[in-house]
Amino acid sequence: MTKIKFCGLMGPNDVKAANELMPEYVGFVFAKKSRRYVGQEMAADLKKRLDSQITAVGVFVNEEPETVAGLLNTGILDMAQLHGTEDETYISRLRRLTNKPLIKAFGIRSEEDVFLAKRCTADYVLLDSGSGGTGTSFNWKFLASMDRPYFLAGGLDAGNVREAIRLLHPYAVDVSSGIETDGRKDYEKMIKFADFVRNL
Image 1 (cartoon, one colour):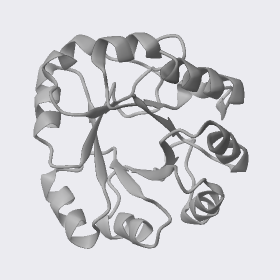
Image 2 (tube, helix red, strand yellow):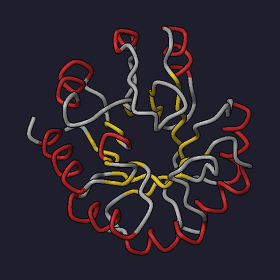
Image 3 (tube, rainbow, N blue to C red):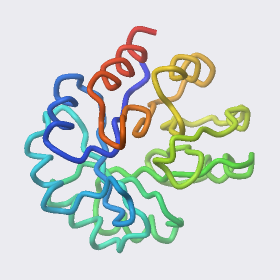
Image 4 (cartoon, helix red, strand yellow):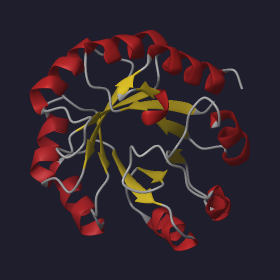
């Protein structure tokens, strides 16, 4: 079954909803320019409230590897998602600092981007339309040659996630703005999204 990642959780109510719906993953955004940004203190508090069966993923954009590794090694996060221009050198450096799993995000604008994602040494790759959290999708036809498990992101919501799973069979679907109303997580939309994935 396709796994679910609710990304951009920002407060206790978001975590409470996640604990009820039990996605396999949730994301906490550490990119300071994002409106969904949570700092280390807030993330630590949210992680304590989070069901232990749910994997907490920290989303970073060109952050210092030592900072990322510190959050992983202290247990505030279970995985790191690299959403900037981090390259293989960066990944190798981070690997020397932590043994926690890594996700590398790729903005898919062409088949060349898919080729780069296929060669990436991160544990997982996430395929998105661009910088993430924009609520826009990309041309799924580019994924015809994708032959490794991946997180599918970019403009997903309850209206299109079933089609995405039927066509692409991704390892996981990642949603943020698609479960929001007026910039905040919407419990009803979260329920609907999870139901549509699990009752395909």
